Amino acid sequence: MTVTTIPFRKKLALNLFKTYRHNAVRLHQLNYVLWEATLRCNLSCLHCGSDCKKDTSVGDMPADDFLRAIDQVAEVANPNSTMVVFTGGEPLLRNDLEQVGLSLYQKGFPWGIVTNGMLLNKQRISSLADAGLRSVTVSLDGLEASHCWLRGSKVSFSRALDAVRLLCSVPDVRFDVVTCVNRRNFGELNELLELLLQVGVKEWRIFTIFPIGRANRNPELQLLPEEFKQLFDFISRVRKQKKIKLNYGCEGFLGNYEGEVRDSFFNCRAGINIASILANGSISACPNLRGNFIQGNIYKDNFKDVWEQRYLAFRDRRWTKTGICAGCDFYGYCEGNGMHLRNEQNGELLFCHLQRIMEGERILSGKE
Image 1 (cartoon, rainbow, N blue to C red):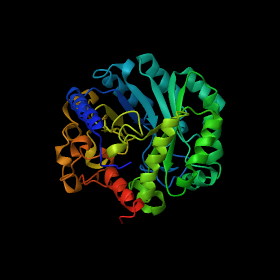
Image 2 (spheres, one colour):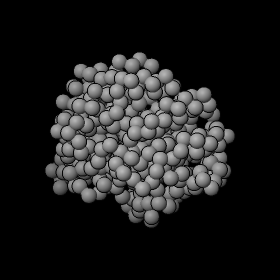
Image 3 (cartoon, rainbow, N blue to C red):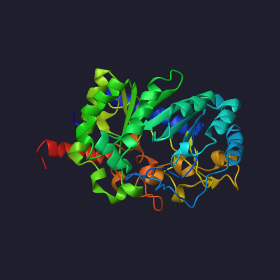
């Protein structure tokens, strides 16, 4: 597949989707809220974008403070169609998730968690489900040696796999497995696929690791350009087999791979439909967005006012048309890539998916 040669019908679909995306910006309808429930973590992952630790100077946000902010969210969003997701750190380190989740359920909000699986046992999943848990995302980053290397724990693979097996037996909770692909686990994807199928996993998401947080310190976390290109060939092939629902993550315009490797075209919804409440009360878009992308704080601002009156850097992204984006023929489809791939201080783009795929394509074709 030639990444920059996009067939006419796909270009037509991309242009129609661009119209849809611009309409979504105009409506600015919130439907997804992430809560950074804690910055504490029981692992020390090499790629952590939040640089979480077992001990952190930022304490857990009191549950009542978060729920007060959620009441303000309800003023601008329909609770029944607004998903709340607990993230971290490792949210299961909190012992009050059930109480918070039940309060959300009673307010009409569906809710879920993102977890490394270390603490997800049968008793905990049962208590969370009783509190209205709707969805779970578990990280499984390759086979045992690769996963444990990335996660910094010798037992992290077995615990995560046990969690996945457990979730396969819980009918009322939707779950998926996410894998952060890097140079260590790139060659294991076919074996990992077979393992997931054997266990009974129905949904799988793949992400690539970008140079932010701790990931900026280890070159093994970044795929080579040719591996980056081959990854999308793998995803496209697996999707056509229809044995598992596989999607690439939400970031990055992928040229001709659009429509081939995920269910929808590239669309960074950060600050358009997605907001986050960080552990210190900061209001942002997705939790990886800090620095100059912070929009306010629940301890001094009303969430409703912040959502309606701020987020302008997310809603009008013409400022991103600089550097390598300035002369890009595909800028209209991408609008500067995912916001979390821009420098938090000066807005500079840190990573371009299309550029990396094109580089890999040249290497694989022998032109470089």
